[in-house]
Image (spheres, rainbow, N blue to C red):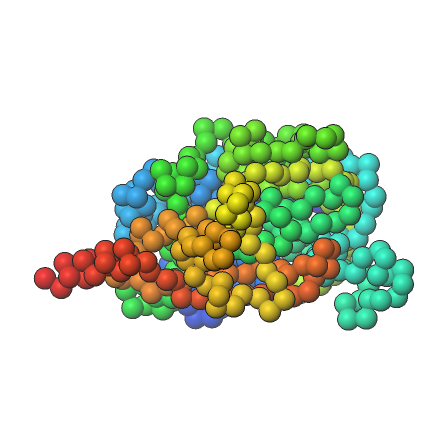
Length: 400
């Protein structure tokens, strides 16, 4: 298989204002007609949202709130977008040669497994051995390169515990992600995709995530040798690499087999391809992340141990209304402090009278390695008394 660029390749399925689905490259996200991503699976859909948000945050984060508003009001220039994305082009090549997106830099000595093992619901070896795969059957799945890239990125985002040395994701296995969800802008419910993405991009000053001068393995870990974690004390902290690696964590060591290709129809998107992929090699003791706070995830800590933050995980039943307040405002419930995602806190400074918006929360509920459910919730965004007061002032000024 030849190498493909995840910057210039048209691999992201999107939906336009008329409901037509097509594929675009990240360079085409400024098209005002595009209103949503349109992946075949919920986990692929949300992974692509995080992919594009991370790509913009990493390469185009505005310096401060004023710069954020300038783009919010005037839009991004295609030339500026192309220039920024071109700087990270080498990190977004997907194929057999290293570096390859989200894959180990070295050829692995580990076991060969079906590529379908990227999917969290795939039956494991023990399940198959005891013939317990009643609902989701064993069998080889074939991925087109586009769906393979989506599945690989989704696994690295959500990786649950996977046995000895198979590390969980940077936020722990199956984290809750909360994004700002724009419902309308200036009365238009068909909000362009780029504006929805920009609502989840934070200024450098507020996020403390400056655009780096070099885009190397400190940001994109697959650009160099893996920071393995077999030795004691080999955890990777934000201080040891670039904090932007929060968007690009790579806990699992994976090398896809790009040589054994087949022709046919992709089992996920249904498109015909002569480069269907079905196998990979995996190895344990990938990057073991410690001490990270992800910008798109809420956290909790015990009042007795305020320095020990734990990402919020979904439980059976998903989110309920008692969870809602803590996703919006830093609050204390019994002996626990609840801390909203940084992106939620930041957007409150950008609230204007021209938008209607809420929170979109999603993620897997895992029981160790077993998927119990996928949840998505669409919730109102709560305004604090201070924000209600500020918004009232803005409305009064507009009325004069």
